Length: 480
Image 1 (cartoon, helix red, strand yellow):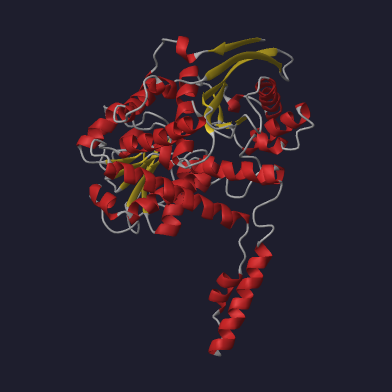
Image 2: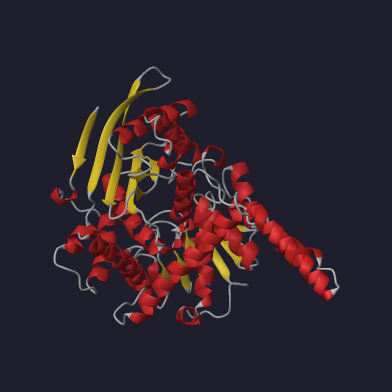
């Protein structure tokens, strides 16, 4: 096994994705009066761990795997960021995503620094048994080197990983650190029965919904996008029916009255101008492995072209670099809400700005996941589920309120109102309340900066500016 600690400051090789992230940061920093040298520190990753490790799999052979864990900023501890399993994982991607995590956490006022990890592997190519061996071996190395810990570095699910992998990592940590009573807090996104929290699975999509709702509460921002009214009836195009895209589309359609007219997946795109049943499409995708032949919709194999469908809201929630300088001129929407990380390139963003298309950036829109991960981490440290101490008290007070109203008015409170008044807050409702409040506050911060700073022309720059302001404030108070 070989292990390398790589210092960002000694690396001069340039990569497109990292360049794109740095370009966004540079735009914000150029508008700020920061002490000399601090901008460079803000941009660079503090440390990057790169490892190669062998695992003996069920075929009896040893296989060598390559993994990364980057720490962008530990201005707050622990640092936070997902671990992705993907055959295309590389250092550039991990570093760029690590820096985005710093800004994302700062935006939503979550006291974490930014981190990210990745394993260069196609998880679908391995049996569950072998995948568990690989995951535990990777986790063991990260734990031993201080890159997984409740107080230092807390991973979460990302592309190619989920609650199952997080449970394996937590169990590995418990076995290696049996005296740490906070072992559950070493990772978030776990199954609810294994230290997880209700609402985490759909948190990123739910957070995106809350951001869009808050956008429509700001009439000045709505007018900027040449929109009006609320979400009801708004035509939505969603790229990617994974965790983020599915939940965002489902919630917007079922709870806000939006009309999802196009859904884009790997095989192509479905379109119905009258609206698609998101849940039915998801079930069809699960059962058949694709979206072709879904009844009641037009299917095209050119999914990329479907991004150009005329709509009110476009949600790219699949991969990075989907809207580029090649297709940005043909995008026909009023509002783009980034569900994925970096779906709009820096060049495309400039074109969209010139065309008057508003883009709500990924650092803001998909921060719901880390927000609820924060709640899960707090739950694990406190060793008590949310709502356990107050739910029945809430119910008691609600029932007394109903009784008081009935005595004073001489009339019965309607059952549906009585049920709402009496119901106590459980963990899921508290998580949703906290997430809603967090995403609203984050959007308000970004919108305030956007309108306060004349030289800021995009919400992306406003978001990064707001995040860096908060990071710098922490540095200054720490005496850095």
